[in-house]
Length: 340
Image (cartoon, rainbow, N blue to C red; front, side):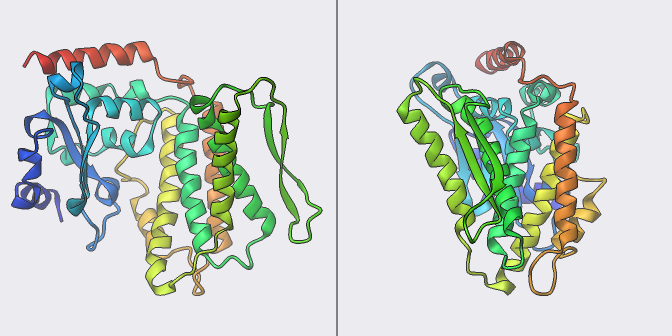
């Protein structure tokens, strides 16, 4: 579908909920594409994803009623409540940051409030992108590796990827649990005495007067990451190859987008410069006949991960957003909305 056809589709009965739902209608301040259409990597069989933002009604702002998001699974549509969107943006969540960076011709609804938010997208960009985009990329890599037949994949490399996942998880623990330093829980690779391991992950823990329940939560989340890696999925090759290549494409896209944000290049959701390369990955550029991926792909991932790390270490972005400035913008947008 081209943009004209998408606009026509949004006017169809199938999307009547955009106009009739009590949370949507005139409350929508931003409506755009999501997924492959937003990235420019759509194919003839791609589903249309629609993403948007809706202002809360007055009683949802100052009353007891709560609205966080609206979903319509039949049309792959997600509309975030304004406050929920702000919370996700402050953490540089890739799934919502990309909404503010879609192409202008993909903006189906853009009110004055929506424009104010889009024009100030830079307020939400911070060094948190290292861990948010890196974390999502690692999750894609984990899905990819878990789905492959990995008998020939070196055990030490598998362990390294588990460690990378855990380190990304550790970053988010700082916001979720009682604070601790990087030296309090230290994870690292070392030679293993176990027959089936060349190397394995070890940990040094130095915690005093630390809440037991918080530690239990941290341990449980780390344990789940390790369990996920331990599960070898039964593959239906014909069914899964398309999904594996799609995961591979999104892994590369996330690393590129995260690096660009940290390098001060903004939010480039539509991948005009590397669109053809991403489509080649989606079409199986790096996949071998047996379904596994060539080492060339993992070498590329390694290069891009190092680029992301370097970009974070040398970024001029702040460590976290300026919450005061964000709050000023949120107040301004809410005032405009209430005064209508």
